[in-house]
Length: 257
Figure 1 (tube, helix red, strand yellow):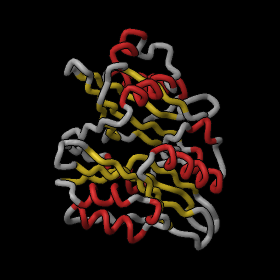
Figure 2 (figure 1 turned 30 degrees about the vertical axis):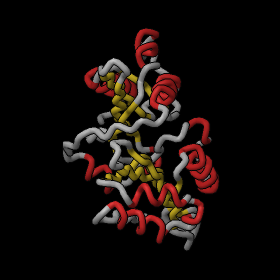
Figure 3 (figure 1 turned 180 degrees about the vertical axis):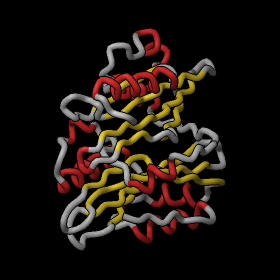
Figure 4 (figure 1 turned 45 degrees about the vertical axis):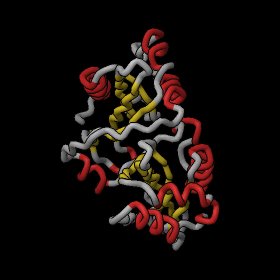
């Protein structure tokens, strides 16, 4: 599936999103007006899943479009691009509400089949070769903090962590005061080729701004380096611990990442 990023002004990006979205009529005028008046915008891939199928590639990608508004706040729009069958797609859908996006992602995921949705918890199962190649090149970019239920996002990140040494009660209490956050896919993909049963892992950096002005960064390790190949998530307070955990899991399975 291809995705052409719209360049130019925020208004031009907004017009491009609407032009290709099947459900553009669902985006309210107030949202459109705010986006078109934005000072800056940034688009980034949030998650992606691809499946090999004899009839052609199936999968979906979710993009996050951030608009910086004149009052200093941010507006988020989510774009879902998907192809779920032969000759079907790519189609695009646009959402201003993340809960509505989650329902759409689940609908598309179930059309494709495979791993149960509740095991994925909305996280990417597969990353295409092109993205893995691009992400291997370090990219320095400033964080874009978004005030969008940040404390709840922190709770969800910690809740899905399965490692026994995940951050504990003190970190949870501090994150209750988080009022803004940024999510970044770390440019360090690890993958061993080998067909559909490829083993791989990804790192996500979740940065939170606290009410007192401090910052907490959680490193999320997502991998299928398990004996049954199940996709799991682990959370650590620093990058080194996440890296060591990935290497430890790989060694236990005799895998070279």
